Amino acid sequence: MRSSLLLVVACALITVAGCRSDRATRGHAVTAAEASALLIDRNWVDVWPTDKDDRLHVYRFVPSMGGGVYHDRTVFQGQFELFTFTDDGREIEFDLPHNAEQVTTGYRIERVDGPAPFDLQLTLELSPRGPRVYYGIAAETGHTLTELDAQLARALTRPRR
Image 1 (cartoon, rainbow, N blue to C red):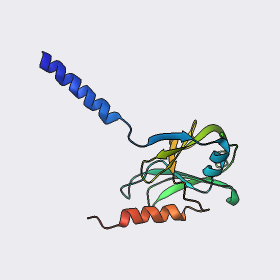
Image 2: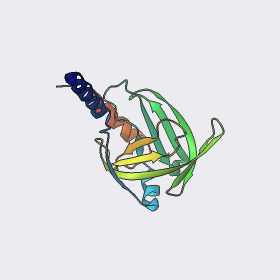
Image 3: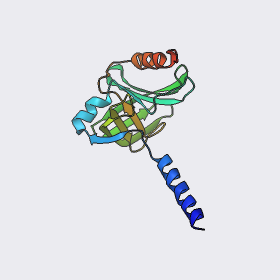
Image 4: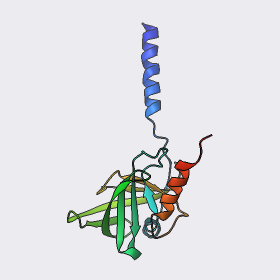
């Protein structure tokens, strides 16, 4: 009986340990002014794919081009939706013209240590599309998805050892 109980407890501990999220080390939230600046001109990705068929979701906020784009995609294929937005460092107001939908959500950006290669985490209180948590790279800036596409293609087309 005692060995059965120990086996049940061991299985429960293994299950709990396996459910832990090692996605990122929680960091510290940036100020509203920093959040507003960090939000734009970078790719916010929910996962870094390891296979060409892995699904990822990407937000990109580019006010200089009139708004932003949301991608639901794999590395080489996907769908996009354009939107306009305003933000004040604490909330984003999305205007999604395809469905005539408006969504206002709180958000925060934190500096984190991973998952690799990321050092930023964007959390949306209510995501109008896709998951609520996305990751970015502080050093990345630009006005297009070209940099992300190139990084993904390089990462997945490297010869395996």
